[in-house]
Length: 207
Image 1: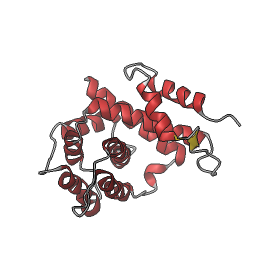
Image 2: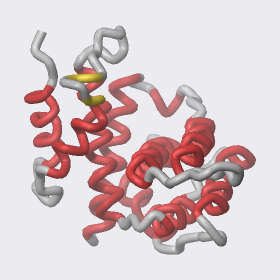
Image 3: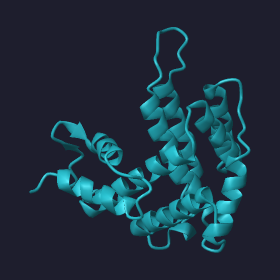
Image 4: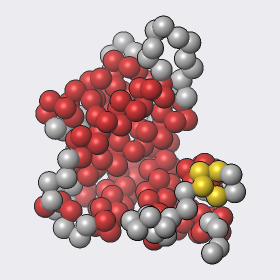
């Protein structure tokens, strides 16, 4: 199995584990993952900037975080409880390697959003086009995905559902702590996700 294929398999496994933590029979619930995709696209457009009547500078780091969030929803749309992770990963790898790009990032993002709205699907080729136009590769996606997925687990384990979770620690939001933790670690380490979790745990306020 290629390195990229292996990364996709790992991300699919992690997505299923996260969704199962939220709802054990999640893939039979008909959750509207496609809606989450187009809503995230709209939020991302604000971070990137689209208003011609005022000066705007793209917040590249935030755009990349939003792309990572969209990939969570895209994976959730693909997992059906029947097709193996390896087969799903092969499909995704083929689509991601055939990037669809419009003239600029905003237009490529609209292709991704349009597929979610009109067809209720995850357009992985347009997603790859967005990645390319933001200078992202599969390693960047993997690093961001594993980090955010681990943060989502951390949130669930620390009271996200009942409202007791503390989102801001020592003057920084948890996403900012996550970025610092991930940057301090080797993404190639076999226990990368576990080390991210431990790094977050070490920073989280002790009550």
